Length: 397
Image 1 (cartoon, rainbow, N blue to C red):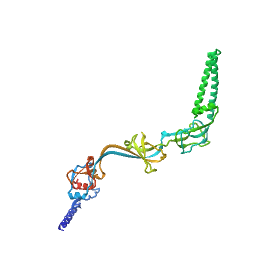
Image 2: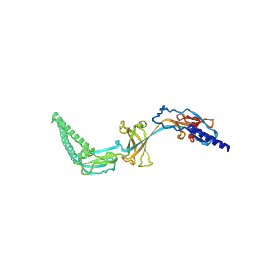
Image 3: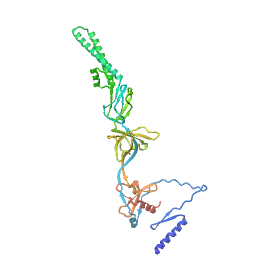
Image 4: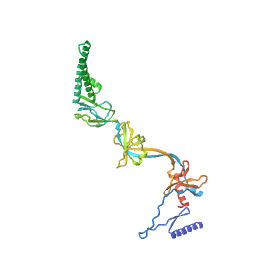
């Protein structure tokens, strides 16, 4: 009872002294800690000199010593510093766009009138499938020209054969034979020219042979799908007049799509052509797509300070629709570095420090900069803040 009374008197006396000195004192586990006295506010009539700037620096290594009973009460936890490659992550929002290399705009090589449209918007089509039937006067005229030239060539060919026979019998001169031969070559060229025109108008070799053999002119032409895909644009209806080179359909192969987004300038060093990307979308929770960066725009948008980045990914089940929002995660592994548990790091001013037990000396800990630790070393995790407080008490700055 006398010891307790004496301790109370000591605390009271210390408090009275602190009050006289303008400071405050706190009691923690029987130890007195001082706190600075409040500073009176200055007035314009009494200017205070500006303090010189302080440059933060890493604190020097110090030793903290704890008695056995204090060490037991702290219940400190420890962890080992590991080593791993530093991985940077960059997230970029993006949208689904068609793969421009797998998108074909269907045009008509001949003018005409649509008599039948067989493909609807959003329909899946196969290569060679008829999309639209056209009635074309231009095509009919080209077939007529081909048939006429073919008939004239047959006449000239018969003349050439008779001339060869007469020349052999001496009944025709060499000059007459050469004239007939030149005319035959001219008509041969006309037939080939008419044939090439039919090819340019969309007829294939088999169809042209049918025209030549049947001597029949057809005004109808079918425009087929150029690739397997989905009709993403349709600009034609039955009865509509179609002109040469007019875009009437767009067929897109959606089994492969592009994800496009804006890459910030600060992230240029972390993303490059060929980088692997993890892609997710709010539309399909828990589903992950994989992709590869195949293009980064060399230009930077002056307004957003971003460059367009394009990722190619597979879409075999066509679940990804054009315009959908996506989230792209770019990861890059760098050089190996020491990995310190976050619980072990404490701040002393502007510096980060950790506390390591001194081997063979229970109760002694070394305060050191976090940058100086190495893989395999032990650091205090649980209770590291208590060591920080003890370090400030034993080594006041």
